[in-house]
Length: 150
Image (cartoon, rainbow, N blue to C red; front, side, top):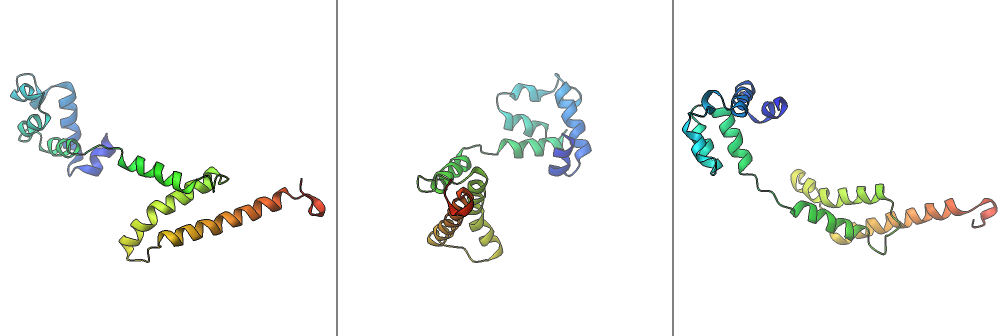
């Protein structure tokens, strides 16, 4: 918890102390406080606590506004299905993982650094070159001495 508060609050020691008060329901989080009447509405609860525990309250309100969804994981599965297709089913897991990383992160990095962003056709051509190189290496590894297939 300490590292989390260090990264995301301006005064992590106060936030940590307020968190322990909340956990023990003591101090400003005591049973006598009126904030416990609003437990069904977390936003209202933390706004009520903002005066007595500003560091923890602001941190929690940021956490409560994070929207959880499955879009990034669905996008990753779609990309992996695109990269590891029936045509490219001999890619080993490590290379497929690296290709997926490149496919998903190159456009983002290109936008951030104002670099060249490859087109889908160029990405496919690079993947085909990579596949041909891998097939050539695989073919050489299967040959025995005197060039005979094993």
